[in-house]
Length: 557
Figure 1 (spheres, rainbow, N blue to C red):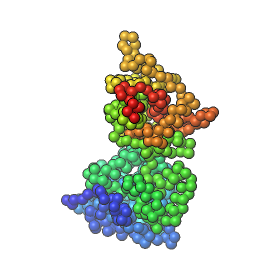
Figure 2: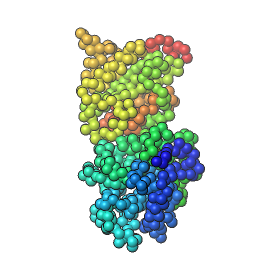
Figure 3: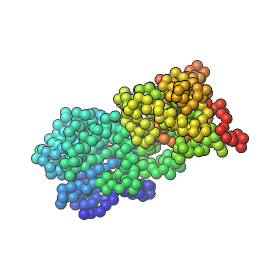
Figure 4: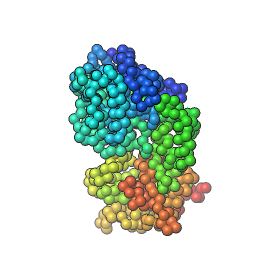
């Protein structure tokens, strides 16, 4: 039994040096056979209709060899079954996908086998089917061997009855699939769908009974913070690549900048665009990239982020819009990843708590805001709760909410009231630490939270009515919003850099209310901002400079 590894811990150095990040084939003979077939296919939409062998960069051949060279001809088993390929736009992704799947169809030995290219939309499905059809129609031998049915986007091998189908994803098209080989195109778009995980499970179910089967995930980076199945696969692929997870049956191929280059802004230098664009000078034109970069630079932050995500494969942390909250521009640089609720309480001399939301189709957001004893910094810790009904009512956000639940930022509760109970427990924790000043709540949405916090005469709650402040919303929140902005800009408001809050901050839209600028949940639509509103409620209280529980920062400054 051969031994191999799919990890590539030196990927950053290899990309910088222009070296391959794709593992070599396990078996040379099937790899060579597949390359012979692949290289003979004609790229019809390229000038002069060259073959892959005449017009492809080396990395494409490395990928083909890796996929088909994982097949053990003696046992009929493929030793590597999954490939995750993430690279920028214009790197011939759809054409290469079509070439790989056509090669698989030609080399296939299983009678009536099925190969599938699964696309998130009809348009994207067409992008992959077009080259597949052209491979056949521009080659006499393939024309005799294959039957093309354009109307159903299917190509059938006349001798084996095997088929290559290009389908747009929905429950009807993928249900019950038993594909020998499946290529998932533009996985980032599947990440936005609530039903994507089940859909892909159906689409790849054929691996259970097809030992020679394979799945290829082919994608560009997302145009907003990654979510759902895309985020799951991306994180897993990075872990395998970095050697954190040992999975020799999974190959990660991610063309992205190392963090140190991003931190140093070296990814913005045109001479470095080659690092993440392996098809540069083939399907990717250097002058085109340079010009797009110049256009994006003139277009502002939002335009630049779109360019970075799609042409340089840079992961977006915040979804910044033109009408974004100004504080969002400073959110990602005001981070202390070591900050927890426990460390916040240890470091703080006084704490205010903000609470917002809590409806059955809403999030219940909580912010614990402490003032650091030695420095006067404001330290913010967040959590949110959602009833299961939110996932059903907000289907467009369900995948992302499940991601936050997995990361520990969000708790999904089954029973009404469990979220309130959890909030009270955190308030009690702050009270027991001897740090609580006040709790700020949207005065129009207090309800059961107020009752739970103050209790009854017979069973008093953890705090008194005097410690609860109703925070007016709308234009009256203008001061707290501006205070938070200034604090973030001066790195005087620090948070843990959690994904939930990055999403909420990216969702926030500013609204002009007379002479004041404010943020409302109505303006943000279905995108949630409740934990951010909880921050503003807490800021409103902390801005009043509450008295420290012990010796104050102001006394030692």
